[in-house]
Amino acid sequence: MVVIPAVAILLVVFVVWQHKLQQRQIRQLAERIASVSAQQPNQSAELDELRSGVIGVGQRILQLEQALQTIEFNQQALASELEQLTEHQQKIQLFDPDSRLYSRAVKMVQLGAGLEEVMRECELPRAEAELLINLHRQQTS
Image (cartoon, rainbow, N blue to C red; front, side, top):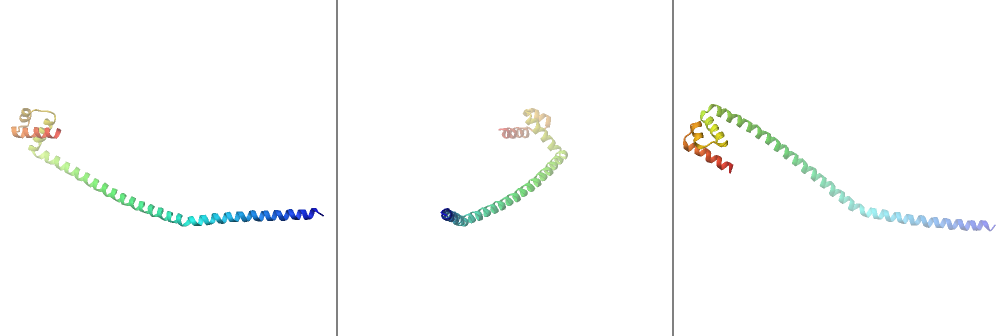
């Protein structure tokens, strides 16, 4: 019969030990909960800041996309206008005999023709031929 009290004592010791172990685990969990709860406001504030930043970046991206669309539209309009002006200039050159002579003279000067050759081939006065040659020299230097 000595065995039953010894088993009972061991059982009581085991239950007390388990109770203390559970109490320690409960304290550790309570400390973790307190720590997480203390960090939660800071993390919420950081999350709010990140959300605000993302919203700001999104708005800036939208602004930049709109600006890019405006630039592309303006570029297309300018390209169209340039094409129209080029066509208009070509039409004027076709119907204006003097401009054809000057265009030919400019091309000759660009190809390295001399003063006398430009005067003779394009029937230009000396002053005009000299002017074309001087303008070409200024543009190339």
